[in-house]
Image 1 (tube, rainbow over the protein chains, first blue to last red):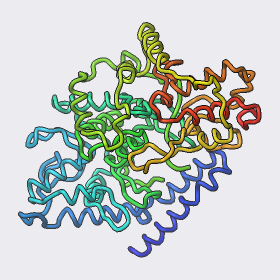
Image 2: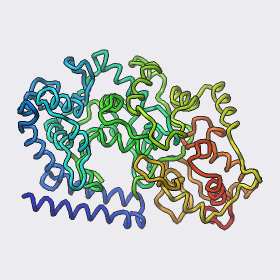
Image 3: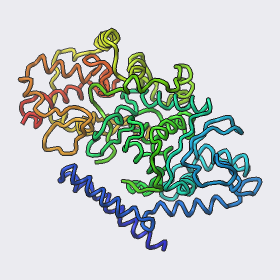
Image 4: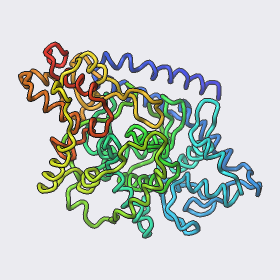
Length: 277
Length: 203
């Protein structure tokens, strides 16, 4: 199955890479229709390369590593040790053992260190996969998020620290900064807007279809990058395009922003890993 | 059509006040604690970049919808920063302006040092032959023609590119000159792209 999958992926990558040339000669509506057709074609799990990450993540979850030579299978992601079903749909959340609100990647790093005794410097170094570099985090997130696929977001905003993170996330969403004066809201506060030809989701309308569809489709396989990407990467790339300095991976601000966005998407359904441009 | 960055739009809609009530609130000190942890140090070579100023703070606080008194205060403050070219000529080379308007590169933490593009098409329609344009800002088709190519309108346009908030506080458009993101020559070229009768913007 693997060679077939890879062949399909390569073919698909070719299709998308070729797209900009056609896009210039088409109206935006045609382009959007073509992309939608393409997305449908690729939403079949058998042809979405993101499921390779799911498989690798599953294997890694059960692999003994670190100074303690144990697997991650006793890691508590919020639903109890080793319970994965529905865990991602409730993250980020507050964890009493660390007294922190954590997203999935922060929690996995904690479990690697606390349970496995793993030096995570290398894991963090490989946080974003590229050719010749596999990311443990991207694989694990793909596997664990997939265990919430088909479920609805159940955002956790009850503990005082969750409330603080939510409020910080909302403030960050509107915070204009740096030498382009941008905030998240610059691009994501109205319906039916485009940047160049790319449609922009309205993330301001709570429980709106845009924010639900957006948040419900991460992690995703990015065809343009030939990699599975998580929300950490999405926010990293948003800030990159906003011309800020590089935000620190797993910093609490990114988790706060994620919690705000998950709360905005409340009631939306996860279908992950998805596939996107 | 790669990843292009957003530029202008006037008057973003903020959340209705009623919707913003009954929600957890955060004070400035807490927010700063988080942002410092997100960006703990200024990268080499970025020392001159303004990361957060008074105007950004107040636009963030009011989600770009300022009360009238604040609106006037910000406008006056921003207006004071505008520097027109010393010789008074705001019109450069429209052909160079055309390429600067279409260039979306430069200034990100993954870019090597290079001339920054203005990326106008991320948000605005300009030359009607260019179909890959965004809709965050108004269309600029026939911009100069609609203003009868008037010199004072061209100067006002240069000033708007230099500092959009001197014209409309909390505009979504970056303050290109104020931040030093674009050079004087680039801003003159862009003004010419909008105002030259031969420019495709006016054809």
